[in-house]
Image 1 (cartoon, rainbow, N blue to C red):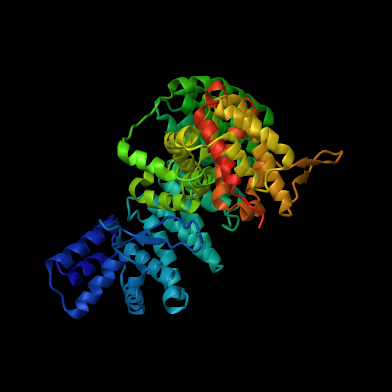
Image 2: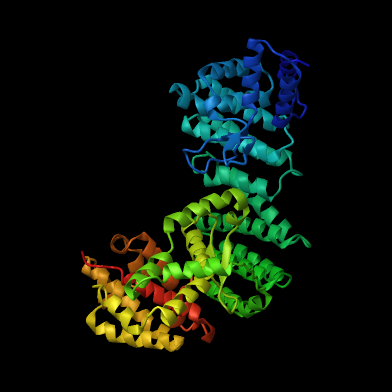
Length: 589
């Protein structure tokens, strides 16, 4: 079959199901099997390009495109390639697609040609797509739904969503009404195809979109369908917990939001309690860690709708499950070897010279580079992207979730802090060996460290004796005393340098009596002025060590009594000493 024969077959109006992937495969086969004239080659290239994109169901951002390449791959040199690119689309191709859209009777083809023209006309020739193209696009989306031309139900709904948004953009009330009726008719005509995801999508398109033109009876119909789906899922047994929880949670949230807006608080709490009952059954059949995840989400919903007493009761359940999580955790370890000669040479290079030179070298060598670490994270997504798509939970030693790191695209700072935290742990053994060599064989004493620190303006005179006492404890391996003595001095040093640079360390209280609090250690480290004075690298380092729950969080864990004796070890002490040395590098120019 040649190109003309294929298009003649495809262009006929038919109710037979056809998928865009089938069209792309047929076009690819023609390219591989035949030699074409220049004219035919242009037509074939234009047709293949049209079906070499995947249409995204939604735009996350208005600057995003609905169309992405069908295939993307990277060669051994790290160079990326794709099966298609918007750069391949020319004005001549747009004109060709317009002619094809007008000629074909197949709504699948018509929808694809018109969709591409609507998306790329303005970037390519500076003008919006013609009105008749927009109308054909909307009509094609409706026809695909009405005639069941594709088996992909989600594609039908996403087509109609895009058509509705286009109608809103151009204030096309006639098309808007037609799309709305098509969506409602789809529910009525296809009861076996309507699952929880489809009804949620239709709800979001018509009810969450305040401009959809939905009337009260249509609105009530969709809510009743949501309620029906909600009851069906919570009465179903033997479903995977994640299927049940995610589905009913999304539906419960939509229903509660709807009833809240209608001022029907009895209905809000009814829906949330049904969800609560279902989760209570689910948590008995899953691991404690999964159970906590379910209860956390339920807790957030209670908080969202201001049912604080119910939220508190969920927190109690979460706290009770915490110790059980700790018993489930498995230790993961690994080993690595460094040749002794290589290690000895490295330690010697760091500990050359007089104590002041050694201290400067140690300070710089073990200070993480924020920007290099961020680059490593970006590069690592090419090899292990799945690790950056899944949220991570951080637990304390009793199994309580103390922090969550979202996907990399959503929470880049969380991943950065976690990555630096891991790097610090990996460096701990080498840092300890360097410090021991400097102390044992290179003349590094408490007095030398104190002398080094005194050259910085950041430590107030009345704090030096406390720091000296802390250093004596470190040299005597009394890490518990060293850590307790040093942390407040580090915090005060940051407060001092922030105020010295012109910052205000006070914040007003919310109490009726007035007054002021000192800004917390973490608040000071997040201030732009602190970053200007200390630099981005040192600030992120101090946050990881002292105040961020996604990192070591030493200051908060110790001063709030959240950790036991095991934290008071040489690894912690070495890092605190190193952070002290880094502050010693700060000079008043």
